[in-house]
Image 1 (tube, rainbow, N blue to C red):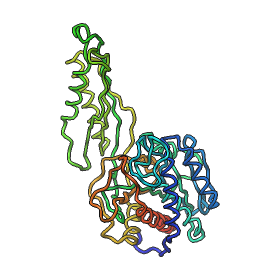
Image 2 (image 1 turned 60 degrees about the vertical axis):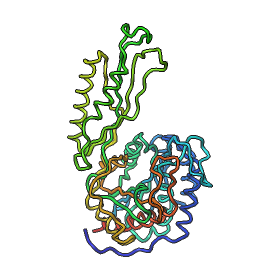
Image 3 (image 1 turned 90 degrees about the vertical axis):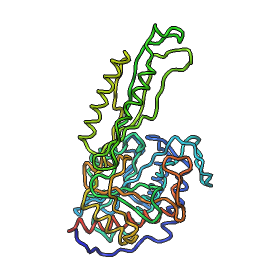
Image 4 (image 1 turned 135 degrees about the horizontal axis):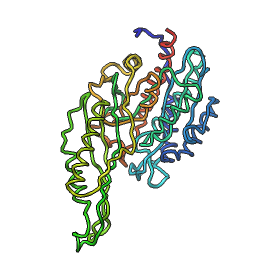
Length: 400
């Protein structure tokens, strides 16, 4: 990739102030997957105020695509993505702008991602004559386990605005504010949600001989499945975790069934297939041993996030310029969490990166999905500066 790019001005304090207000507004009205109606209305209102053309009602009704400077130009299309949905978590941050929706909060920082995307849109729109490529900023519903990214990707294809290059980010509290990390190739894992149903025969606890108790079988499976050693994090990593076991409702009743839920995380298709086959064999053996019917199901899957090498180099060069090389970390190994940004990377070139959200001076910070997690305002400026510069540098790159 060419080493030299034309230098563009960086966003100013007014843009950062705007992003802070937007984040605080959105933080107060969190909505779950495919229910982001207030969120969608708010974003459309902001885009209308900025006079940025956009389409709403996408991907199930709440997705939005905003278009900046001739999105169908011959100069190509650059994509920027933000997620919209929140989590079913009761907030405990104590923030002045705390959630007004009981039992729901932006515990994964999507309020911050949307604020970065809107502020970046505002800044790029004001300078839309300075670059040739079109830009699409899209706001996607249902990232939290519902693969809204796949539906949004299909919508972009139908509209004929699939980006030539696309970028996305996610806050990460194990990195300090002012730093980022990513890598070319596999960055995030394949994740399969697993359900194992164990069917026995219900009976009263005083007559166990008249039934078949599914609980010992379920307990055996929970233990046996996790005895398989998880490798250290490498290109062949595999992690299987059973997080939920449901069975029965009374101490003196042997239930008819037990259900286990878990996740399988892998970094290669071969490892995933091998692990699923092994799980099937464990289930068959348990079925014979405990005289139960055992059924293994993959209830949902999210593919691995695989970054394009050239796009990752664009990101690294951009971030090195903005943050300084010591704050730009080249990740040696992938992370084992997932992101449905993977779907658009299956269709086009792009790069997903991790944005530090641990406040400066703090050694620890609440993890994502915690009721205490709050995307810090200081990280907004970093995200806006990087996304704005990425759009401009990618525009130049597409002209070469």
